[in-house]
Length: 173
Image 1 (cartoon, helix red, strand yellow):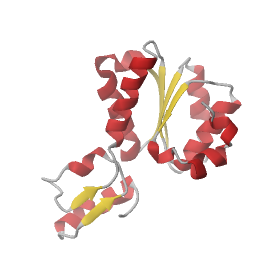
Image 2: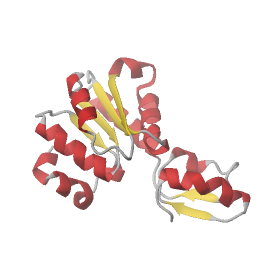
Image 3: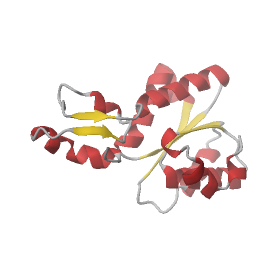
Image 4: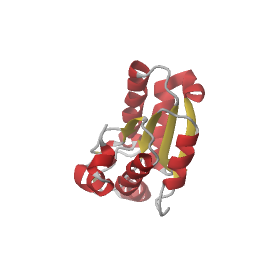
């Protein structure tokens, strides 16, 4: 059960070439189900892409006129959220998703991305983020007085690792 999407992708080919089992990878990358190409690798978490597709369907059902912003980590982990929203919104993706912001795992904050998303006029926010950036994002959304319908990745949905550091009062709603 090794952790992380990019780290596990970097060793997947080597392990499979040498027939070393890569079991219960702690990543929800949609590609962990490619058993023809990588029979020695198996993921453990639900697919991030399917998660994002479910978010899109929920937004369509509960807020059909929503203008959506997406923040995602610019790697294989985050790109599954982009792909999932494209799946969920289909041909209407470009019309519905009005702001797409990315960040690097080494970026000190995601503040500028949150400011840009709010300025776009979005009233729904999908966050394909990890714990540190999730806490930063929640805090900044609160500081800006922005109140979008907010979907945050299950990776960053931890009370102890995300909501408490952000401030529980800032995560209400």
